View 1 (cartoon, rainbow, N blue to C red):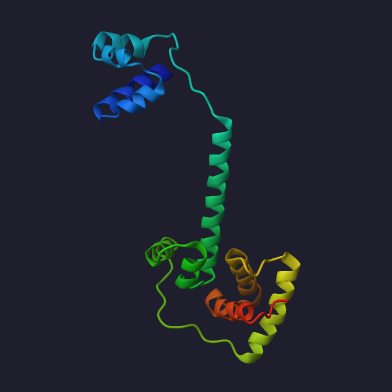
View 2 (spheres, one colour; view 1 turned 180 degrees about the horizontal axis):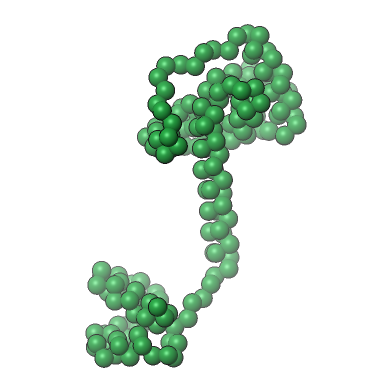
Length: 183
C-alpha cells in the first residue's frame, strides 16, 4: 500500500470515528477534510504517484520509547525469572507494584501450577550460612540493600546459587536488612 493510500485510509477511518482533531494534527486543513467527501478527489489522492505526504521521525521521542520498551522487556524477563525461582506473589507485588491478579496471570502464562501452603522454613544453620554468602554477594555485585530491586536480585542470585526458592529466602533477607546485618 502506498503512503498516500495509507494516509487516506487513516483519515477516512478517523473521520468516521469522529477523530477530527487527529486529522487536523496530521496537517489537514478543515477545507481539505471537506474536499475528501468527494469520491473523485479521494480516488485521485489515493492513486497519484506524486507523494503529497511524508513521514517525519522525531529522534529524541523514538529513542526514549525504545529505551523505555527495553527497560519494560528487561523487567518482564526479571519477573518471569523470579517466578520460575518460586518468588512469592507478595514479594513480586512489593517489588514491582503488580497486583495479585497480574502475578497469577503471569504464573499461568509460564505454565506454573498454583502452589498451596508454605515453603519449609530455613534452619538456623542454613540461615547463618546463607547470610554469610549473601554478604559476599552484596559486596561483589554492589547491591544496595535499601533498594527493593537490588534486594530482589540478591535474593535471586542466592536462590540460584544455593538451589532454594526465593520465597524461602526473601523473609530472611528482609530480616537481615531490618536488623542491620548487611554491613
